[in-house]
Image (cartoon, rainbow, N blue to C red; front, side):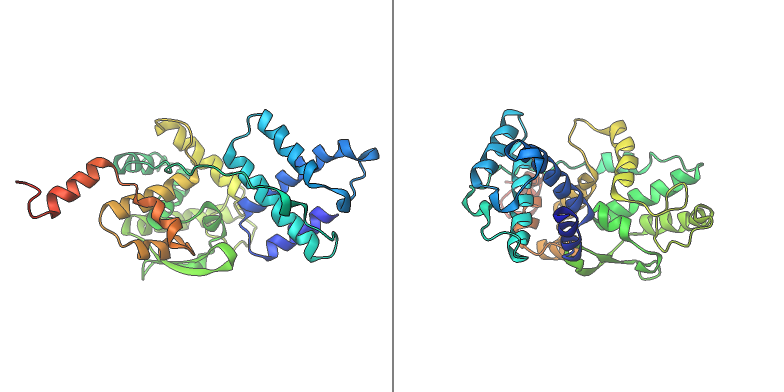
Length: 296
């Protein structure tokens, strides 16, 4: 019961569908672990102790769960117990005495410009689904949208004449993002296809499934994963890889960091700064091009 109410709460707080899915999965795993401490599996919220939480993290560590995943699970528990305390379901937050796991933020994977061109050309344009998928890929790369933001786009969020997209981001914050001519052309080619997919449903969403229904982020991920497998040099690519590529390519061509922050919908400039990971070749090229004595 508490989990269902908590899910409604974080949805109302504007958490992304991806975050909600991950948090609820983490809570389900935590509850399953807690059953060993309570008779008949009847978990008493007030009796959940910091030690029980530490035991769970130790259990996860023994299973070689990554530090990144541990940090997210800790964030899920912190959010859940904070809500329990806020709603007077518990008197103390056991997470207050837990040292949060830390992880080193590695540089994000991104596609080179050549790889992105290859990726964008993969969908079969003789297929209506290929036309749709090309529009999805072009729009993701042109705008840097999160996969959940793309799934939420409605027809009236796209202004093709002005080359703009209205995006509802994290925390229901709205932003306007420009898009390029290839994305516009791909969307224009897709719109007649959308009419065929719509069938008897009256969805306002821009992108529709084969059955004419709204996409969720998992269905979109499945489509993207198919194309990633064809060109990926290594594992670890995700829908966010296109977003990383969007940011990296803009910065490597001289885009302003604060303008990029606005386009990505980051509330903190430090989050955007991770994309300043230009390669050594990029740095050397910029030096040789820009320094008065770089070529001497």
